[in-house]
Image 1: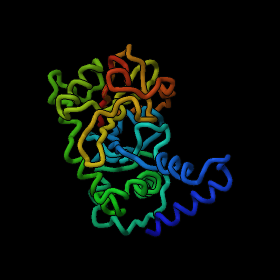
Image 2: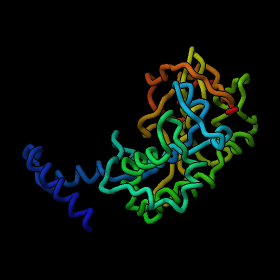
Image 3: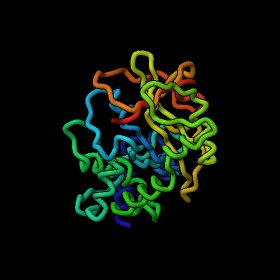
Image 4: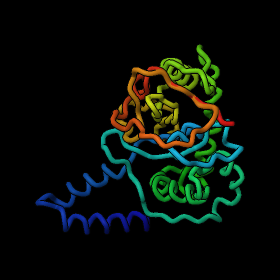
Length: 271
């Protein structure tokens, strides 16, 4: 109730400054629609590909597994997802699951800490998911996210595809191998993202989308953000990490998996 009252007060203040002749009811409806969400995306990331962006530090426990970037609420019919909703972060609130988070939700930022990443993800995204019972406290947001992560093992799903995909420093994979394996294992099309270095595409993120009942759904083209690649190159899935920086392929729009990365990729493994 307190959260709603604060939101209503802020909306009223904004109305005074930006109403432009609209009724308060019309203005409130617009703001509420833009702040609400109807989907969530669980963002998995692959550490060695993350490090193609430049300097990074990958914990030993994270070198051979997909890890969590975050769980983000979003809405399909607006460009901006809700962020920075009312709420605070308290490290002690998740102390009971800290060991799990250190393994499955680490920061790769050199000089950064896991707690800094968790705080950022919760303040920016987790607070906006609190309308769902599964995520309506800080502890439940992190526990609920790791539960979803455990339920959908991306590495195993890729390995179990009709054309197995595994981390390698040498092999390139057609994008179709990756998207078909994900579709087979998940029953829906997630979004696939990559980074590019010297014209080489590296498998970087898989974003699995859910409705508000936490049923997996096809992400589609509405999911905003991400780093995409042209559908004309193979993808690598790296085993090891690089040290030089790159310019991500940001010029391509966020679209469905069949087009969101190149037609062939690398997936480099961690050492």
